[in-house]
Image (cartoon, rainbow, N blue to C red):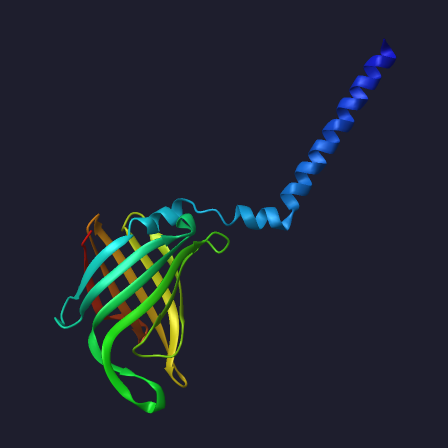
Length: 196
């Protein structure tokens, strides 16, 4: 009987060690860690409240207006944003200009590893760069705040900030700032109304 008890206890301990070792291997497996960090979560859901079609208008310049469409991608892991504004002069090949509508494409998301919101942005008007903006969300103020640097003229780096303020389910504002003499100065505010 003692021998049987000893064998059972030994078998249980060996089984437990194997089980714990397999769990440790799974936890330490880089692929499993990367997959675990890829799931959308509560922060992605914050972005989801901005999905839909929105009409925007500059708070001061009546000719700055257009439509923004934000759609979820990959089951809410990312969001694609398409912006179409009014007509203006756009740079094209051979140093020429042509009149066409302002357009911008953005990809938004939340980086679980960096614990930051991310926006990648490009447009057909000014700049040949691709903006990479990092941001945070303040639940008390209902604001997303993004920061990034831009260099549209060689050697002139500008520090930029963009603040999205949620008003209600059908309205928000987007304010753009540049750092000048140690202070962020507002250069544009857009007012958004949901159209669907």
